Each structure stands twice: as structure tokens, then as C-alpha cells.
Length: 112
Image 1: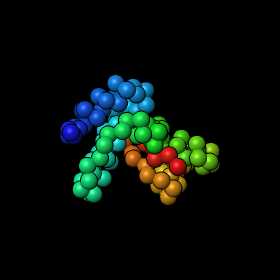
Image 2: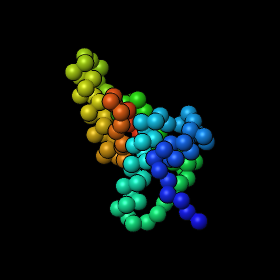
Image 3: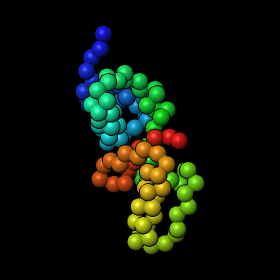
């Protein structure tokens, strides 16, 4: 027996089982990602919250994420910081799937 999972149900299940794993903005991005995969493939997916928590990590910025994988940013002023963020995002997208979200630079990265 299967049920259709809505975005609010998706978020509620994470908040119930793994409340510290992702922010609401990150969960909204993850839901959209999985919904797009499901629609593109025509195959229904099973919601496995533990697997998603193991597969993805949320970061405050692409730069923070990329540095955790060995990316070296150059020090400097605000303009260079923007360039570092863009370079970090490019570094990550060359290696894995990255979902950007929110009004800041938040990202969710598929662990590799």
C-alpha cells in the first residue's frame, strides 16, 4: 500500500525522525529534487529518511562545503569572497549534485 507524500508530509517526517539534519529550506529543495526524479523516471520512490540523511549534507555556503572536500579558497576582500563562492560551487558541481536554496548561499550536497 502506498501514499502520495506532499512537501509538508516530507518535512514533517524529517522533523519527527531527524529534527537536526536539515533546515526547512534545505528540505524544500530535497523534496523538489526527489519529486523531479520521480516525475522524470515515471517510477514511484519510497521515502527513506535515514538514507537521505546519510546521502546529503547541508552547508551554509558552497565554500564551506567545498572546503570540507579539500577546496582551497584564496583569502581577500568581499569581491574575492564572491569569486571563491562561485569557484567553490563550480568545484562541487563538477564532482557531485548540489542543490542551492534560500536567500543566502545555502547548499545541500550529495556526499561523495
